[in-house]
Length: 211
Image 1 (cartoon, rainbow, N blue to C red):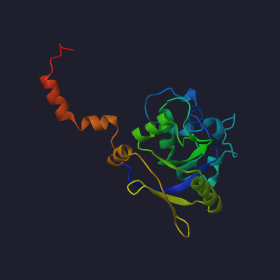
Image 2: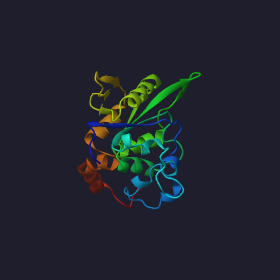
Image 3: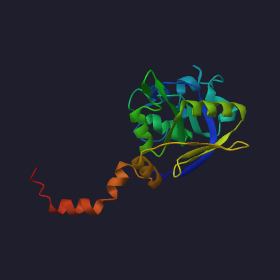
């Protein structure tokens, strides 16, 4: 996968919580194990009318969001099934980073992203950014005020910067291992291939008849 260090792009907002993977890419499109061909069906049931025409009421169909590459949404994004196709669809559509809020309700933490979805994003070079609820609300307000608002998501310095007349920056936390994998552009297979010499040395000493 491609390394992720920093990305600048237009922000699109999806003002919905608990968006599950079947809403991101419906089950009828899961007919391929290739990572391509899914972007056209991203958010299919919201994005299109029953006759196949574009639904003008769906947020991401707005002209101001057509070139967006940073998605800002609400909490628990990517819940539901573990299908990796959801991330493939988002990435092929053009999203490089997704921002969502963490919340505390009655002493319980509501996640920004479902765990499996977050892990699938890391495997495919898509950065998930968790901000506070108040910070995400501020991003929504700024996007509503400034059309085609751009942001830079800087993984190395762990900052999301809104390019307003006076720039507004938010710091985000990320697990060091996840950060390293994204910056180096390595998924689990890539990490394994970095140790081919050690694997070959082990295999040369291993008796295949012993378990």
